[in-house]
Image (cartoon, rainbow, N blue to C red; front, side, top):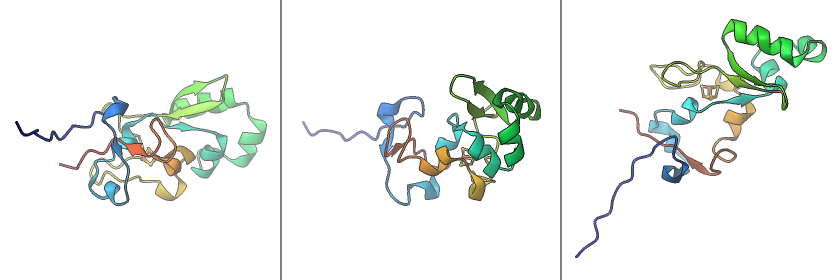
Length: 133
Ligand code: SF4
């Protein structure tokens, strides 16, 4: 009997379903990577213009995280590693993702994590490609 080739569906939470990244894949993707938690550091926050260099040097990361949580741009801060996690919306979209265009609204200033994906990430050189509807 001939084998039927199955087209597997990507599940963003299941790394084994992620596809090998290739150029052009982002063009019609629903920006699934922008629904993953994004970890950022002080240098990212400066580039994103959420804090000044002065604040980064003189303010404690704990206080910075408090302020950014108040503003709603950070949802978590890891005291041990000084890593902040950007806020996600109720549907898991990053708060900087445009809901209609599915494009980053701060692309030029985006965090290092986003710049390096999918080269560096949960499954290097693979991504959770899901075609736009
Ligand atoms: S900052 Fe931009 S590129 Fe990074 S996850 Fe958010 S929308 Fe996507």
